[in-house]
Image (cartoon, rainbow, N blue to C red; front, top):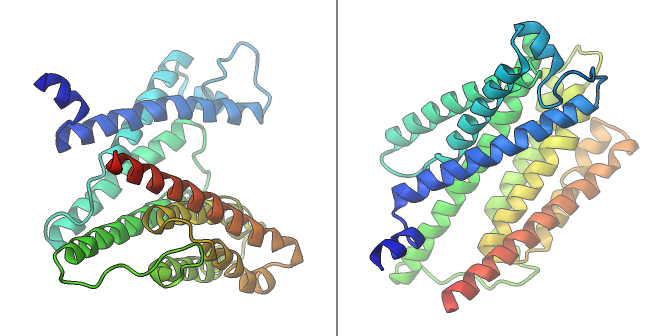
Length: 290
């Protein structure tokens, strides 16, 4: 009976290893699917396996089975590295900084290796910086959200001990508890577009501000922060509204009226994330009651 209970309530180390294995296996499924999609965008010879890139086969001269094995191995390693990310606030500040830097370095190397074996290695160093920038942006957002989660957990402990006032009243129109998320949204949506435009100054095609930011960075950021807000505070309908409105200044200063879709994209992705987070919060609460 004790062994059965341990399977359902594993130790912290076992949970981390299990989560790493799950993330690694998920990456082994998602990466080949992504490669199949990339191959669907180009003309592939019929004799070539669709789950590897023809450009990689040509560059390496390897059989497709070897390239596939490397692709799956790097996918599992990268997924496991993401799953093994430990809570960032454990230990001293120096230990946190060292552990975070080491994890970022290792996971970045695996990420670049995965990009290379998937045929996404850029021809110029600016493209390499763009690839790394995408990953570092996602890493920074998740790290900051985990920091906010850690601060919230610490605040709940203080409230339970009577060392801090109780939480503010919630509700779909709550605003005050969202201050940290709103500041983060303002920093990203108001600070990132001009920075990206500065980086790509002189380029004929504004890839960073024309493709990466509106179609990848902005939806990812709004969804993940909306989910974080939903898990912490429940439905918070003012946050999607704020995410949409914060895109307005640069829509007219950096883009034109054709970029107005960013308002709806930011708001809808933030709303979807918030509702998902609120659902997870509700299910967690039901589980505690049971």
